[in-house]
Image (tube, rainbow, N blue to C red; front, side, top):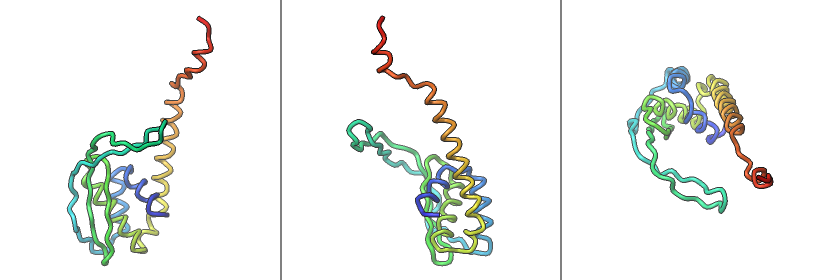
Length: 143
């Protein structure tokens, strides 16, 4: 699993599930908190679809945390205010970055979490697609 995929999974996963996975994978390892979980505001940058230019939509509440396991740093930033979830995500990041054996124990479950999220996104997209208005079809109609 690559770092981007891991970050996407942990950013949207349920914090209780993340905490359980982090606890299982880091069992026997000393977790040192370098930066306590903390709330912050970050600028939300989005791409405008017509011109393809980036612009700042506004600010978003996020939490961030940095930990160390066996000399390997892990960090996470998550949208919202889930302090426990961001700590667990940082631990999982350190496990991944350091190639700890504990990460292999939870990788399959993390992949399942990612699949669940994608299935949920697909269901939501299907619902939204059903409300799409095709303006060209409306223009072609004579009143």
